[in-house]
Amino acid sequence: MSAVAAPAKTMQALVLTAPHEFEIRGVPIPRPGPNEVLARVRAIAICGTDAEIIEGTFKGRWPRSYPFIPGHEWSGDVVDAGEIAQGYGFVPGTRVAGTSHSGCGYCRMCRTGRYNLCFNYGREDLGHRQYGHYTQGAYADYVVHTIKAVFPIPERMPFDVAALCDTASIALHSVKRPGIEPGDVFVAVGSGGMGVLTAMCARALGAARCIVVGGGKRLARAKELGFETVDYHDGDPVARVRGLTGDRGADVAVDSAGTKDSVGQAIRMVRKGGRVAFTGIPKEPSSVDFQKIVLEEIDLYGVRANRNTMEEVIPLMADGRIPAERLITHHFKLSDFREALRTFNERIDGALKVIVEP
Ligand SMILES: [Zn+2]
Ligand SMILES: [Zn+2]
Image 1 (spheres, rainbow, N blue to C red):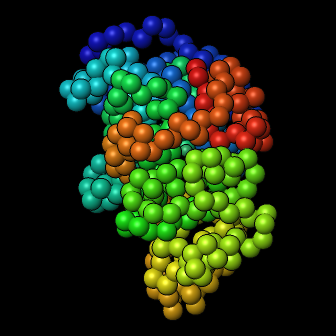
Image 2 (image 1 turned 60 degrees about the vertical axis):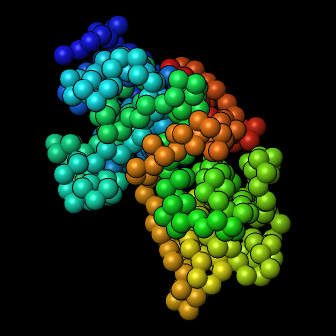
Image 3 (image 1 turned 180 degrees about the vertical axis):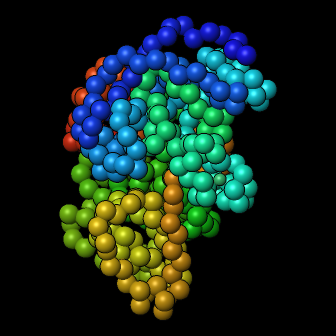
């Protein structure tokens, strides 16, 4: 039973109609099922994956078909909720941050906590969702999510900052996979939002030194945030990182650049017995140094989105230990989405996290 009726029947949404084609138009407001909430979306952060989904890079998978509403890094407040959702405390007025993956909840991967690897991926009939990828997303006035994919946020956390919880939770998962030991030397390969967030998370988990590898205004911002930086325009970044670490290499590297070169570089940047995680998705085949992996016992970790780290990252963001808000460079209205996307894609004024407000 609904506690509060939705205020209107239609809403404005960013609707993709074909690769590279989209418009802001009126669509029906979705209705929540028993274990779902309807939220008024207050802020959405543009993700690199959004840009690729809009381009049609993953057409047939993300989205499966058109029309489609993307968007998965968002925050808002609950305006309506199904009976089960209300039973779990998601009453109207609850401020929440959303995330993309919601596992079926029943398969072995879900039951062992690895719902981002759900065996029933893509089976909406069995309860699986990935919002903004193949399930309708959040670039709209309202969005429906299961309560497995929304998390309460503190009253004092602004909505634009809360829209970064999803990205930050992926960064936290990215550093938890390889593990951070107190005093570790950490390298973030890539100076975009994800790269800087992995460095913030590594520092929060006890890394002594965090080196960010990248270029341009984004790298300058990493430096402002107190990280050591290596500009790949200044020569071989592997040699530079090894030089900064007494020629031993870092303890842990996380690659978020996801290029055919960066994945191999991340491996060559770590010490003997080092750990490397990969959160960027290379589009081309790349060759890596398997002799080093074997002879130096390098541990490699794939990272798919996040799991169970929303509840962990929200308090770390709220108390400033992960100052994700420092990455917000721009705000746009949903009606100005085209300009927002251009700012993000062309990295205008060093754009990192660009916030869209419906
Ligand atoms: Zn994202
Ligand atoms: Zn599952």
